[in-house]
Length: 384
Image (cartoon, rainbow, N blue to C red):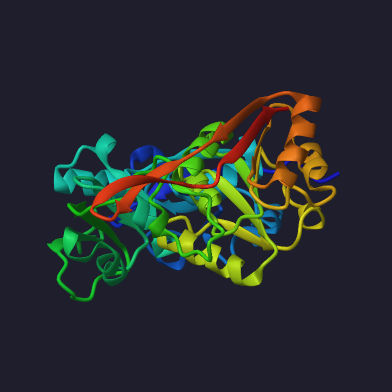
């Protein structure tokens, strides 16, 4: 049997390097035999160590690295538990890991700008899409962007915000300046003060923000359907028969950790869903092309399911119900008599909540205004 593995110490380090470490952090580094980190971080620490630079890709290589090496000190930027390697290592190694944090780049940026840390929105774009910035740009909101490119951020913000770049925070080469198109150090935080208009995160966005071929859950029905789905942080939704993806997208917009798999049999519509998701700031919406119920096999089990299309396809309703764990929510919208008949059977079997939604919108009738009705929608919701 191999010996029990040694502890792993994760030490946060700033641009000020060794001199900026606390005595406790310096002692933890000095006691280690092996240093791991990026090449830039490894160069910040003096002394005789076996230095191991992170491989690429990193995460798949971690288990083998920590089987091979003992007495390891991992160097991490700033606070290792804030968008850092510390969280990954704790998930992987559990109680083996001790973390000694350093002020994060966000803390340092707020100190330089005079911003209240608890009132700032933080967006990490490290290996992530710039579209994630879009939902947080709301009037009067202050945003700090990590791992972003100032030019790309400026393109999203447009003329409706001010951008300040903070480079090499805490180091001798620190610079803080309004960005106006100049080149910037890659090790920077981007501060944004936004004054433009924005879309609410509350479900029921205007229909015209979506590209659609007509397969779109209308605004009022969408808001009611999402209230029944009751999204919670970290939960996963299946949007079966996603159409333009409006239910999936507005579920994902309610919280950054809400996840979605949109199931759509049309490749053209699937591409449209991805485009809508990116433009509305949730590029992480996963689109699965296929026809339910077969397309549902092998997918991660959901916390909630919305069925907007395919209600009458044999096996779809049963497959959705079977996929839900106890406490999961199922919401089904029916427009045709045939789909209403299927919903009525399931309602008789399982109970739940049955609502008929009739929406009338005012529109011009000559010089006057009259009501134009939309097709009524029957919404059935049930908790397993």
